[in-house]
Amino acid sequence: MDSLKNELSRFNPWWDGDFPGKFVQRPIYMDFFKKNLSNKDIIILTGLRRVGKTSLLKMFIKSLLDEVKKERIFYASLDSITLEKYSIAELLNEYRKLHKISLREKIYLFFDEITYRKNISLELKNLYDAENVKLFVSSSSATLLQEKNAYLTGRSRALEIFPLDFNEYLIFKKIRIKKSESYLTESYFEDFMQSGGMPEYVLTNDVSYLDNLIDSILYKDIAAFYGVRDLTLLKDFFRLLMERAGKQLSIGKVSKVLNISADTVRRYLDYFQRTYLIFAIERCGKLNERLKAPKKIFAIDTGLKSYVSGFRDKGSLFENLIFLKIKKYRPCYVYQNGIEIDFYFNEKLLEAKYFGELNAKQKKLFDSFPAKEKIIVDSISGYLKLK
Image (cartoon, rainbow, N blue to C red; front, side, top):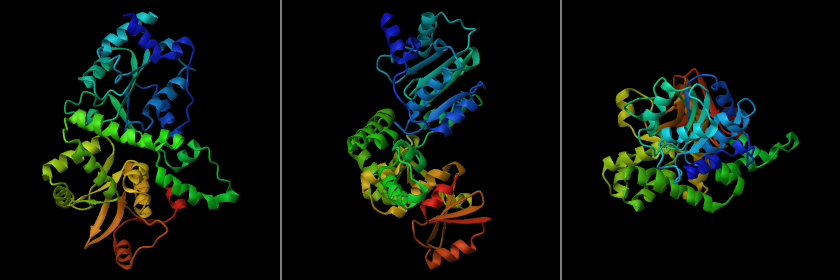
């Protein structure tokens, strides 16, 4: 077991008094960790691969070292080849032996990328029920949260991690816009629309990083996980989704364009949603209308959309960014007589117009639609005011 001990020490350098790496803080997520530190719930970080989940876990570990003995904090990346042959029970047994920790002593466990572990929900449930632990885990797939056996229901709290928003983007870029130079905001915002908010790409601006990211998601998180064999079709489907981001997606039209069945389109669409590459919202209306009408889709990151389909249609990119801001409210879109209004949520009607105006037909629908509050977001300042 000496090799395992060495691996565990490599994953947990703070045991030896070392903590390599510098992190750019993301306060919203750190506050969530701190507020939920004292309860028993398993904290599940979900989100696109490389969106920053690992960095957030390690950031919190670093802050936790001020309050907890370093030996009581254990981190393991469960998608590591060196650890894949060991069960969680075996890893914890070796960890406890290494530091002479009894079952009575509370420990803080951080398990990264648990997606590919079989029976992981049951293992986490057993730990939660039987041991004195606080669990933090991450997953690049929504599958864990959608399992039918529901082992973690009532035992967990999920936190979805998003790419950087504009304020975070400026912090990562070390850009500070002075009040006297507010005219620069639009230029930086358009840079942000084009590059998106994937943290490492924002820091490096290395285009090959996006290539590698897309391949990792398509091949590891979709093809390998769901058994998709036609990789060319998978890539074509992804390109089509990026082209259509911000628009309605017709299952029938996609079926004809790619020459595949409607069932295959629905299945692939589900795969892309489960890996957080895209989101889909329904048309507002009665249940029958919602189920039959095309869904409107959005990309997780405008940088990925721009990279695949080109930096054009700024209005669509702007709408995508607004959706990411309000996604937590579960908006739907309004569509009547061929006229569309972008979002309706919490009795609020919202239209995104990037330095534009509603046309006459849109204005008529916008004015007549029953909503307590009506918002037109037509500028960067409007985007920044959304919460």
